[in-house]
Image 1 (cartoon, helix red, strand yellow):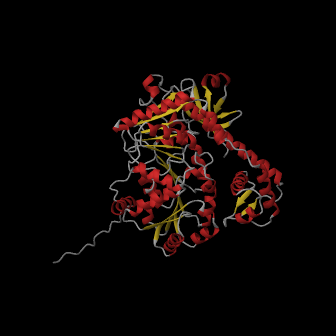
Image 2 (tube, one colour; image 1 turned 135 degrees about the horizontal axis):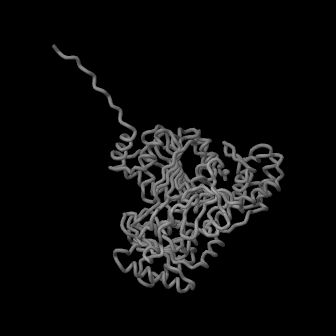
Image 3 (cartoon, one colour; image 1 turned 45 degrees about the vertical axis):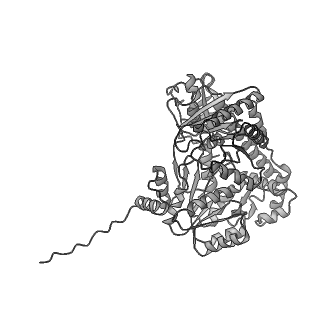
Length: 566
């Protein structure tokens, strides 16, 4: 008698198995990191996700793989054309479907071909700069497509706290609404707690998940050399680079300088010493910047001396040193720049040549006053116009430059006096609010922003001057606790870095506190004689621990007394 045939059980692959299969078969990635997989699974489940992974940890994979498992277009907001170019090339070298870019550098034919691929569903990925998304015709065309995943690359650009703030990023929240609220994936390599809060608020992330990897890069040896004389500092920088480039094991690296003039000075001096070197800054022609970029990647240059313009999108694993010839404007910026070193996992030297007077230059470079005249013009025009206005129509009625107009609009929006509709038009929020009061609110917003900027500069001073473990200081800034000195920085080698003090009542790492003048905050780090608090409204403050204890300057801020939103 023939037995009954039992139908085979169909076992559906899990989401994780699907992601791994697509990663291997389409992109050739045999393994995915735990953080990558976790973020991908949240995306697949339809959630908004904020991902903070260090440079070189594979952030692009987090959208490239799920994009092939969800129906619709993946729209990637990328701030630089060079970045878009690199990401397009990366996808073209795989078995993934077509990827296109829409940017101002394209010829007319290229532009039309890209849009044709988007409209006909041939493109799986579309890369646009945020400036493109400020155009009504671009948004209207995208709104007719099914955008299933909205990716914000270099998401720290959305935050006024961030070291690379871009005003056009501020309007991405409205863009997301206009595209029907697709799931949002925000990616960045560096985001301290206030930056993360800003990203979530400004993009309007809903019931989001955050995937944050450790900021620790133990293979980077951290050091600071202090000077009082600028000439001595310059000679020391040149001597150090000559020594490093003379050794094949440490030949390739980056030198960051504060100004275009400084990049050209150091590049000229090093070239005379026989170093294969080039300067890089925003004042160069785009073709010249691209040439330097490609020569460095191809090992035709050993050293690039650059301003902060050289950073995003640099993917070279064997950078053996990053030297700062001058102090940068923030720990955020510093961390991202040193993150270019040692991406292959091998040791790299990180040195900051520090002169306290250089901080005055950073304060000057980052200082800006509110454009009160333009603020008044914008507020008056919008206040007199009962219907929402197109941005182009507003600018036609103003005498100010486009840059001044954009800054005034950003400040008025931050002050809650002006809003952007879902159609991208501008409207005055409260008809009963006099324009001069709107200007006053906007000036207050600008002053708050300046306090935050000065706060970041002071934290950079703290890093340069600490006698404690530099890695503990860096990690504390980003909200990560390292219980012991790292053993791989100059202060550890000198013996000045000591164990952080044991928990002492309410003064513990991560605890919430309240100050009578500065309001609510979180303790970010505790050293032997000082502690650093991140206050919700005034930024980072480093306080003398004995003074705090003597005068009872901080009290515990219990969860039942939540801090107000910024």
